[in-house]
Amino acid sequence: MGAVVLLLSACVSPAINADGYRGKVMQSAKKMSGLIGAARLAVQLDLDHKMLRTVTDNVVTDAENDAGSVVTALGSVQPPDAASVCGSRCAATTNQACARRWTTWERPSSR
Image (cartoon, rainbow, N blue to C red; front, side):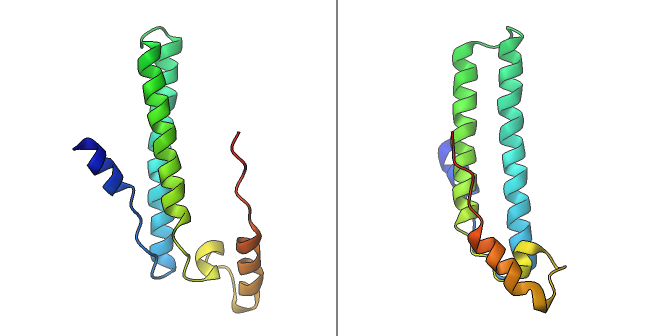
């Protein structure tokens, strides 16, 4: 049951406008922040000898997998326009530059 809830909470629907897209980015950032916090806490407890290494490994692995799901879900959302990516500061004359910057952006390689 918990896995189903976790999978459903990771779903991201299409962004209809700039505000919707920014909201999806914000929700993804909040989820990612929580996952990072959980992993950091588990590692700190492990270093303080207050958590079993097997439990730490499970927490960190789960956080890593969930973070990958957050990235995948957000990556599947097409921003409605360049202003959604670059912010409302993009004037009509710079929308093409913003869009070009967005389409040429590359994700960092995983190590």
